[in-house]
Image 1 (cartoon, helix red, strand yellow):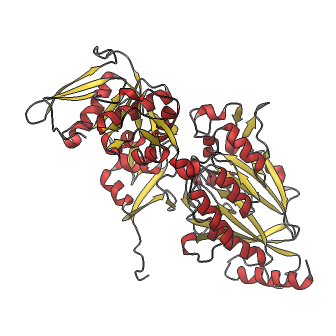
Image 2 (image 1 turned 180 degrees about the vertical axis):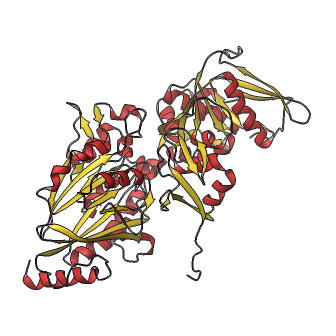
Image 3 (image 1 turned 120 degrees about the horizontal axis):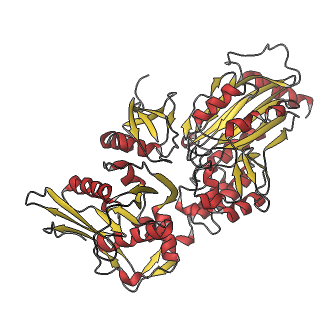
Length: 493
Length: 72
């Protein structure tokens, strides 16, 4: 760097930190470097903000700053346009490469695209991936992934960074379907982080790039004062301004690229002497990168959506038939005994014979997860009782059984009869693996011993798999599994 | 999984998100947050998104959203 350029950089650094309480003495600017870290997390395929983010980062680079771009995981899952791309998630890869990301940690939803797609993503990424608590078994290695990295900025600042991914307390796996992380072992994040302490030596800046959630980041900061900053994700927390815990700067930028995080570090004599951070409202930015804007437009115009994924012999009409289709799909995708779908979540009256991906997401647009709950017959009745009480009419479509709600003339429930697929009364003395949407699991009031667990897959994904798997669609005509005795309103479409 | 919403304990399934805890807490509150009239804060007072992940023992507070364009 030329001396005039260095002088400008120093001046900018001092101006930038002029409001910082820990401002270093202004008389000693020599060998100071200002490192600007842009960070985002949990984008979940929401790509519309990338043109503005790219323009802002490039502008900062043009000023000659030491700029780093860090991604704290969960690029996928949340936008069907991206999730259903061919190959899945490809737009995120191209955008992150174009943005010039320097380092990324894997989030739990990175695995949602499947291990082979993730390996392709990692191999084609023009940036390294870090996660210290992911331990691939032989044959399951993820290209470009290591526990930590040492980055050197253009002005020579050495930055050591390691990554972490959350795991669930119950199964010790990240929150994704267990089948998607076969061949990988995961160690406890905070214990693993402590093993990274030696990285502090030999680095001017020591960072953790995490996907463990804000509350765990606070614990990490409490346990590792050696860190200069933690750039986090997973809990979708808007930490603005960045806060200091145990001397460690803690930052997280919400989700969906609504905010871009910006951390500034002033480095002098091999250590960080001042630091601060905050969030930039992406919507409020005006400048856009035209090249990135064109990329985003191209990705949003995803032709996959118009592709026919299944052909029925007739239009599938009415909530009984559509509900049967959706719940059969849920059962088939996850090996469940019984599945329920609330009628409010069936958003089409009619599915034309040529079924497209767009149709599926119009029919089931909410992104609800499938939740599995172990329930006995009486608990199933409790669910049906609550569903009927909401509007004094049938509300839950079902697969794996049929039911009749018997009422008096005031629509008070007299009893609920449950029948298995063979038409015989459902066995009362056993538990069934019941699948419901996350909306039903959390909105309906029914006593059940098992709190249940998310299967980390959406109801729409189950339907797509069912349709693409060649399901027999000829059965979804004149089909009814939910009954009311005496019959209720006759307006069930 | 046990979550505290406005200092009340709600039981949700494992892997639940912020939206699930709100629905388990109160349908009225859930709709107010959906409509933008209220926002959700974590135990430290930071705003969290409806699809944010929860952990056992997470604490949430629902507060009235700040009016835009109002006087400071």
